[in-house]
Image 1 (cartoon, rainbow, N blue to C red):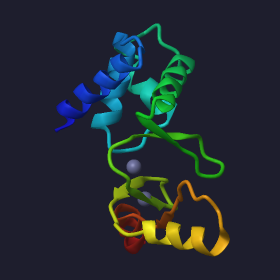
Image 2: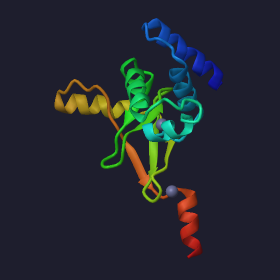
Image 3: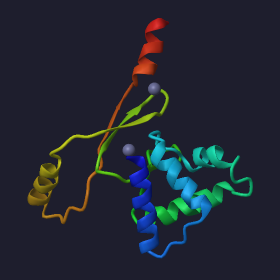
Length: 146
Ligand SMILES: [Zn+2]
Ligand SMILES: [Zn+2]
């Protein structure tokens, strides 16, 4: 499954004329296999052993290339540093207010909200964002112990 996703991603890189360097390959692979919505720093730390000459700025520049061709989404939530998400299908995020973990979930039907918003305001609606906040099972679990 993730092998196919990687292959497809590499294919779209080729289609857009973006050179596939070993670093880009590794960053994509990490994004696809990690479900944790990493920051550029997380990716840098995970890969610095393999690519000692790579800097955080390099990681960030590559992420920006991926974002421009629509392979990744950059998620910004207020004050914390941007996190990156490999774009699969549209999904929503539930965010832990204690540890900052972001978990994907799928929920259909909010297109209706976009249509409604467009109808009542006359806006040409492009997209929406929705985040759910709370405490993850791990964090609420540790709290009960205290
Ligand atoms: Zn948590
Ligand atoms: Zn996500």
